[in-house]
Amino acid sequence: MNFIHVMAGALEDTWGRILIARRSVRSHQGGMWEFPGGKLEPGETPRQGLERELAEELGIRILESRPLIRVHHDYGDRRVLLDVHRVTAYAGTPVGQEGQPLDWRHPLDMDPVDFPAADRPIITALRLPSLYLITGEDPLAPPAFLSRLARALDAGVGLVQLRAHGLVDADYARLAEASLALCESRGARLLLNRHPSGVRGLAAHGLHLASHYLLALRQRPRDWALVGASCHGLEELARAAALGLDYALLSPVMPTASHPGAPCLGWEGFAALVELAQLPVYALGGLGRGDLARAINHGGQGVAAIRGLWPE
Image 1 (cartoon, rainbow, N blue to C red):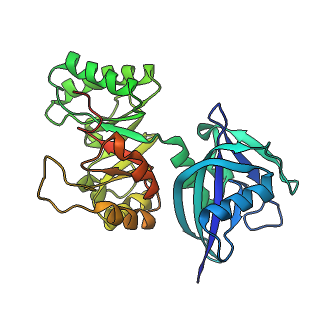
Image 2: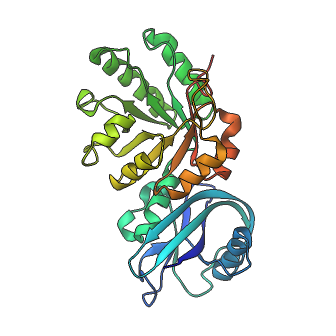
Image 3: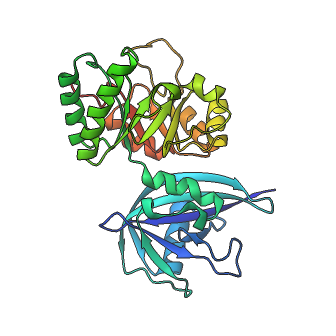
């Protein structure tokens, strides 16, 4: 069965809300909310198809956009590829040209059950930032550690993984409490990197799993709103999606200082694996802020890094 290539746009306003449209009750998945768009026509480039669809459906002209996520989904009676772009600037006022109801909604206020199953990873991608920090040195010196974390947050990091394996549980808990307060003061989210049993009862926005924990799991860890995992290949990416995790880190994309001779994916290898993933994927390994556009253009959610985002 061939897939239907659908171009969709996530239009963003100045308040961070995204435009959604309600599907006709007579259409496939009728009555549900979706991101505006439609089928790519033969001979069209993705950009041309997106421009045509949003002009026909909403009466607007795209000025600025970038890739967000590509989602393959099998509904049983049809297979679709949702090729979604984030539209950050456009000319005109969006109006449902076919009479379809429209609404502006913040991603955190979107209920996935109101959307077709294929759209649900899109909502997750819209909720996630593009810069993901894995904390680096100084966990044994909390004041220095927190000072560096504050500078990283002030520079635009939106998601922080607290990686401090050398700390005993009690010290990790204290550092997590202080890090959480700092993240929340800057509008960022904190993830704990620890065995789930070792962080039970700690306050945080989510949990990050090492790859060996991921492969041993039978179900998504409970009590965490945001859960992701480290992945190095297709098996782990598939496992993360099957468990309903929210994101994956895929590495190593480029050579790293800690493993200079290790094989790396390269950007083409990264893109090939991301194309098969069913969740947002961050590029990790030898990268920094300057690689963000390349990561996005190769299908990634953004860049994750230790050295590349942890201030000197």
